[in-house]
Image (tube, rainbow, N blue to C red; front, side):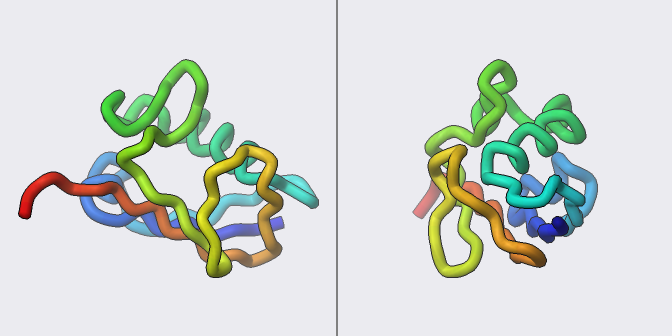
Length: 92
C-alpha cells in the first residue's frame, strides 16, 4: 500500500524534500510507517523531535492523516492516505 507523507517546516529540510511516498505492506500501521521513516531518514532527524532508539516522533510533533491524529503505533493506515507531520515551533 502507498501513503504520501508531507514533512512540514524544518522537517522538510532535515529530510531533504517536503513530500515522500512510502510503499508499505498491505494493512500497514502507523508503526510500520515510523519504522520505514526511521530506516530511511532517522539519521537526518534531530534527536529533540525523533527518538532514534524507539523510532517515533516525540511530543513536539503532530502527525495527522485522514482527519485523525496518529499517536498509537497500532493505528491502521489507509491506502493512498496523505499524512502531514507537523513540528511545533517555539515562539509567539
